[in-house]
Image (tube, rainbow, N blue to C red; front, side, top):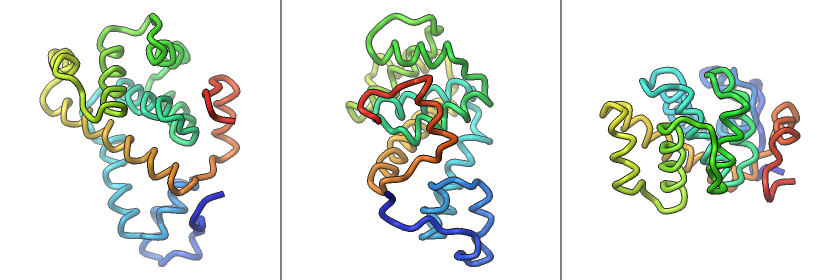
Length: 184
């Protein structure tokens, strides 16, 4: 059970109701601090709709953070979102294999981006070798977008865990296909 209430539109000042267009528990909880919620939505919106980073690779990096941190909410939401941007079941199976140090059929750049996301989540920063390998394929702008995307979602999973965010049933269905270790 969440540590703060999920607010509905009639509980929020009219100028902040637009933030509840996405009817998710995350948005309903964050709007307890409407200006912070707006700032949060601004970064999230940039990542999803304005970043020059390949959207499939972006979603794989986000999924890696969610899977690695055992964030049911993050992982399941971004499986559904990722499908809108070209993430396939084979990609997700590859991500899980890569996380377990097994081989996958993912292309080399995707594998390295997943490795970079794991390094940032586990060790604070990407190693020089991983950064250089990714940088050989991406522009400076894409590199900044990738690093900030991974960092933002490392923060998001911590918000979700601290607030004890409840996952919506529609998203929980993802766990039937991808059971997450440590998550019931």
